[in-house]
Length: 203
Image 1 (cartoon, rainbow, N blue to C red):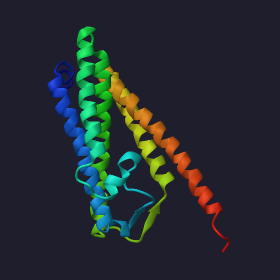
Image 2 (image 1 turned 180 degrees about the vertical axis):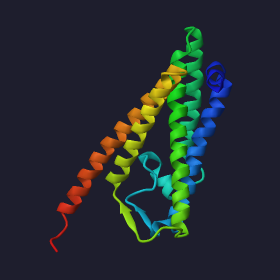
Image 3 (image 1 turned 45 degrees about the vertical axis):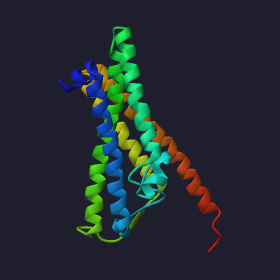
Image 4 (image 1 turned 90 degrees about the vertical axis):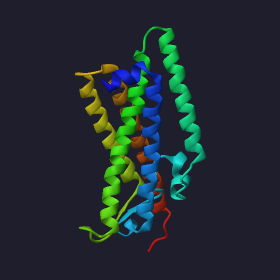
């Protein structure tokens, strides 16, 4: 199976990871471009289109090449190779399988979300079946994202019961961590929104 090939051959693992990671950024730019071209007349996202703070400026500026992204990509590929070599030296690739599951499955989840968003934004851009205007607060977007990540975590946890447990447990753990992170970010965003409302002058 593909999972076995990825775990046993680092020169397959690295390209698979790199392709998924690059597609994440590329699809983000596609969605952000659609949003800025006019989809925001129906759907307004408070703050940046990008949820990950480190990439928000690059995505908002529609930079095709993000220096931060390139650095993280290179470092992650080097890290994958180092972890694989460490696993070989210890004669156990279970840790490597867990990490690759965490990386790959989370990126598959991200790409799935991007494709869904792109379809919705294209429909909104054409006003195809979409009327009116709705604004999503930052806290709402992050809370909805958290729910999705927790859903992915449950799915991968169930898959771990039937096949490649270390790989799918890695995916479940990463998605669960992302779900908690976005939930926490949502709480902080809600506090900022509440404070902003409190500081508004009385009408």
